[in-house]
Amino acid sequence: MPYYVTTPIYYVNDAPHLGHAYTTVAADVLARWHRARGEDVWFLTGTDEHGQKILRAAEANGVPPQVWADRLAEESWKPLWRHLEISHDDFLRTTQKRHTDRVREFYQDLYDNGRIRKGVYEGPYCVACEEYKLPGELIEADDGTLLCAIHKRPVELLKEENYFFRLSEYGERLLAHYEANPDFIQPESARNEVMNFVRGGLQDLSISRSSFDWGVKVPWDDGHVFYVWADALLNYATAVGYNENPEKFGSTFPADVHLVGKDILRFHAVIWPAMLMANGLPLPGRIAANGWLLVGGEKMSKSNLTGIEPRALTAHFGVDAYRWYFLRAIAFGQDGSFSWEDFSARYTSELANDYGNLASRVTAMVGRYFGGELPASTADGAAERAIREVLAKAVAEADRRIGEELDFQGGILAVFDFVKQVNGYLTEQQPWKVAKDSSEQARARLATILYTAAESLRAVAVLLAPVMPETSGKLWDSLGAEASLGALEDQRIQEAGEWGRLPAGAAVTKGAVLFPRLS
Ligand code: ME8
View: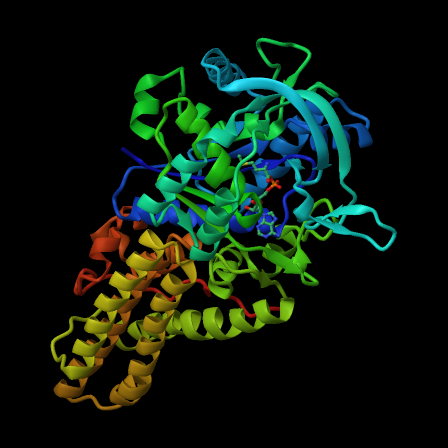
């Protein structure tokens, strides 16, 4: 069974901003981490293309919704993921036939089995969220208008005859599942929130709309299209062969992890599992919610025009630093704010000074003192043993935090703490001073110090490759590691802490600067 990880499928009403890239980069790091463990991985992302929000965006731009969706998906979303080095295995668009046909079949089954009824939906709806709202989820403007608490925009009052999924029947089974699987919803605060919500009682869910037609047609009533969420959630199944490729489906579904923003937690932790239960399908392993990137204390959002485009940052900091920054700066699951000052300060101190300088100093010294041929370590002692021990711990900790707990910040910090230790080791050992002594003993010490530092960098390159693939590739090249150890992509996390993998004699060169000074 591959490790199956997903991102939300994003609305194509507009171009992606930092918030979408945040979840996608996190999923990519997780996927790359598991590949680096030697696991088979299936990483899915895509776009959500139906519903009123897209329809209105298309209308506002004077084009049919499919044309709009094609333009956004192909010219905006996919190119950004390529730019950010996202390594997805599949990109599903909900207007693809492979999806729409299966959506119809899924609900036809539920309809035939009596899980769907007709009724009237009356209540508030936020088009920016594409969500039916409960009265308690609204805020009141000064003039009495009811606003969506997330978008701060007026909700619309709907009254429509719709089809309803009998969600209200699944409360007990959902609670039993949460109880039996404490890791099903992450973080803990999100789990508590969902459990309280379900304990409060579930209402049946309207799964169709009849006042517009940009959606998947309901097979038993073509006056209706499916509610965009009823269609979208199924992407996780249709993309891996639901009702189409039993072999692929059986060996991939359900997902090990659905990464989602906390705004869409309820859809994933309540509605999606209930839909699966209703159709006798297995539930995902985990729903992990990330917090929000905030602008002025509010969720960064396309609808509110507070979205910052990732390319505005990558142009300045580079793609790798960008991938690193948000996971490093914000504890996954918590909200956080972006600021140029904070990014610049961390870039300079942690990437350029701590990591980049270490790499350039060590490779330069191997060039200067040993003609670029990595010397053997023949005179190691307590200081070197300490480095080896710290490395072994850092590998185990990073693997547990990123691979198991989805604590990207904790995992990255474990590696950067190791980088600090190696810097401290060099400061103490002062190889540049040892080099002034040409005795045999001093040469052996110098060789040992530089071997220790270079071998440490070999491990760092492997551990940071899922986060900063291009930088690790440069470091791998400048350590001359490929000739003996093979491609960076083939290195395993489990072996990263095995000391002595980089052989003496490796051709070390002072490669490109890993993190150029910011202009
Ligand atoms: O909700 N901070 O799509 P969407 C952090 N189509 N993450 C953010 C964010 C922010 N400010 N803004 C967006 C949808 N995100 C549905 C999903 S899934 C079957 C259907 C991220 O385009 C976060 O992951 O509104 C959030 O859940 C997702 O983008 C929502 O993207």
